[in-house]
Image 1 (cartoon, rainbow, N blue to C red):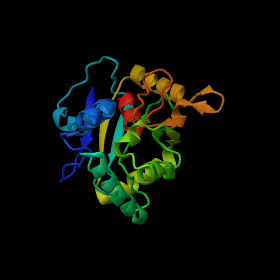
Image 2 (image 1 turned 30 degrees about the horizontal axis):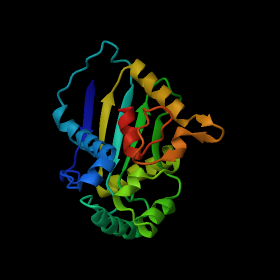
Image 3 (image 1 turned 45 degrees about the horizontal axis):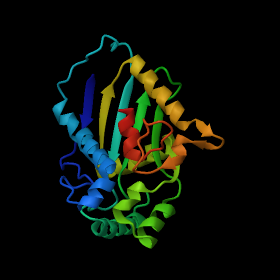
Length: 235
């Protein structure tokens, strides 16, 4: 594969500490969420390791243009995941910062861009909660802290217009990073198939994309996703 990346003068500050010092019960309950955090770090730093990578498939034809781009956005204010209490306090600060910066995201965000001749237009897609007040209610009323990862909320797919606006806003603030990957036609088709399955109803009026939460892994049968899991599943 061919990789291209964009890095900034200041290293991107992840929303997750490098070492998550959780108690044993929390470690057990949040094992999958931690894995997503590790994958996130891998994506952010892979660009520096893979600049010299070469195409590995004969399908990569120079006349074709199949590209997957994964974008990563910072939270409105830095989050501390060291404990449920610290997450609650720093999440509260992020909410206050977001009040003045409407286009910033509370916990940071992952989303994808797929460009391929197999599609009539470029696909921009990200998964988010349909109503951010639902998440705030779990944080501020129920005060569940890190437990917010295990809560199922109503999900929604973000499309081209919403994500292009986020790219524009975060680019001005210099707090967006991306990893661009040149892929084969067959890989592009698999991504399209996955996206179509993910957004197609499994029961009347409900698709997998209608279920949002950090404990989901969308490559499992009929599971929803959080934003990072969705982008990493595409990767």
